[in-house]
Length: 163
Ligand SMILES: [Zn+2]
Image 1 (cartoon, helix red, strand yellow):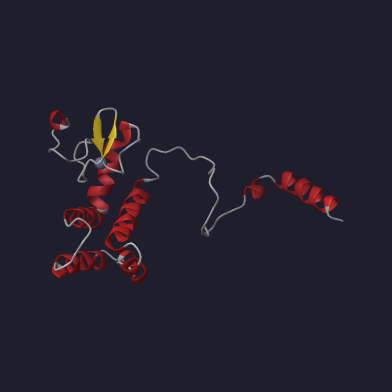
Image 2 (cartoon, rainbow, N blue to C red):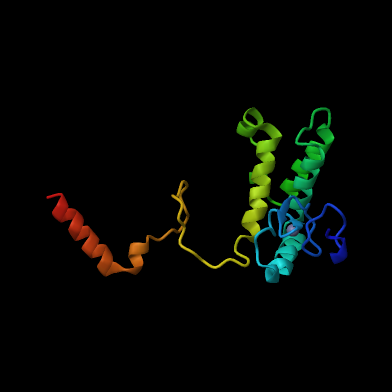
């Protein structure tokens, strides 16, 4: 499948990508960072992964290689922990909550989510989110800041409705 592009079997079809190809798109297998992104951004995503996120890339691949279980493999687990700490990502160590709830699999999901977030700005047009915010966004600015007259009218309407 992806061998014609010079990618080893099992790897993401985007050239040079260090992640496994696990998601199918148009007959090829892509990693969770490259899938559904326009191919013109493939190299920029690969560069981000290779230059800035290898501590995460290696960690997720090792966890998958261990089938999300470190029973009897404490050393492999500690290696990942140390790598994350050296990279300054103490926040991505396995938490006590994850240990009790979901285990290594939950931890892996968080690490992969961090990788997706690291490339989320690449190749995406800004759009208005359609989902409800579930967490505080630092420095978030309400849309009404940009449309003061609309905000005023809305406020007026609210006050008139609730005298
Ligand atoms: Zn990829």
